Image (cartoon, rainbow, N blue to C red; front, side, top):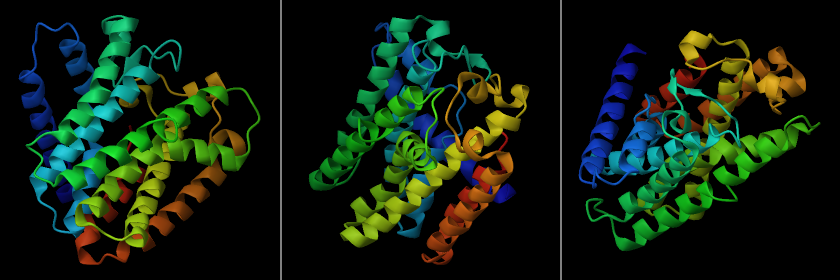
Length: 294
């Protein structure tokens, strides 16, 4: 795992380097550039970028291309966190031990900085520095747009907020979490199928792995909120229960959720192993999700 963590650190550094160079070329006199930087460089592990790199490794995709696509996804993720912390949504003052963007600046600045990171993702994918054909770029942009919008991340966030303090079925909770978190991970894996021009069945296999990795990541987040250390997590824990969030833990209890997670992990592992020895880093990514503390 130490070797894997070094690889993870390198991917994070390379993703950050790309984003720093990109944002340094923007007009710093623009009032939104600084809050954009604050939001995107808030100390994240760049795990979505790592999933792209580790899936791409299976198919021998050029590392630089993977980092560029990873940077685009991390912009989407950062935008979603900035908006998630807003008073009208989860109303969190802290993010990874730092003031949330709307507390560091103000609400309207946070909203606009988040919006700007969202659009920056598509600017990255359409840029000439990403050496892919226009057809592939168009498909990447279309897929990421779908998975980020009302039928993906944004739609999942809507139901996450709508379901608060309501009695919701297990299926609806899982569907909500797949949209809120799973769809972006689905893109991370499916994007490789798009680049390789795989047929629908093979591309859908990658999408399914991504969806399940995302679900695993979200449930692990919920477990961390339930039993995690506030100092390590970087924000108050037990927030889900206090807010009446509908999670599998609230639905069926902590121990049954652990059983669900372990069964999900086994299913993901079986599917990833079908890709052979080159899938080792992707397998370790799954282990990393379960072992993380924040």
